[in-house]
Image (tube, rainbow, N blue to C red):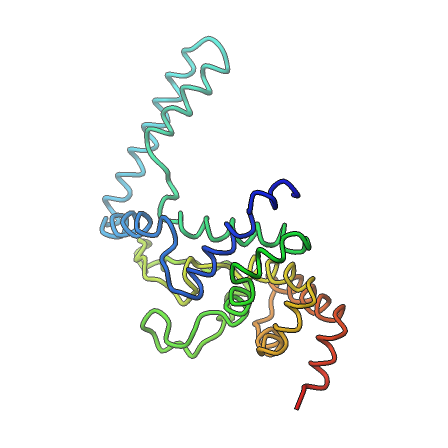
Length: 246
């Protein structure tokens, strides 16, 4: 962790998060994901079934060809080569995967004091507040009033809605840019709350009110309790919370 800190890993993680969540900059790979989603969404249910059958046939052919080779290593290499030739199957989720990885990185490194200066300079306060407040009002051109939807505490939010015929419509649901999930968001916030300066700022800027307003469910119990515990360990933050300055 120390070596990663010296190489500036926290700034490299936090800066893109601030740009996408606070500045509205597109996540790397978002254009590729949108293109793949539009292509997949334009395919009818019958064509999609045919494509899936073709993929299954390719996989069966690769497996059969691999079985004709001598060693297990050669068989595995042949199978991997065939799968790589077919291209990534989750390309439409590239931006989401990148956002999730960055939030996990903040959760893993955010509590280290060596990282906090770089995180703060890169916009940790703004990122933490954006994550806790959730999707803003009217996001995506909808009449959404703002905040995290209740389903975010019960299941992971998807960007693709399923039509009655079983096909994907790829109509974006309410969510933040990059579609961060609430469990990873709370884990990242919890790590930052280990620092007194962040805690105090979080309280002063209404973060606790937003935290208490989060939807409760099986995906949020652990992160919610850990965030409350982190706040309770900073006496100055608790003093401001219980007796706000005039």
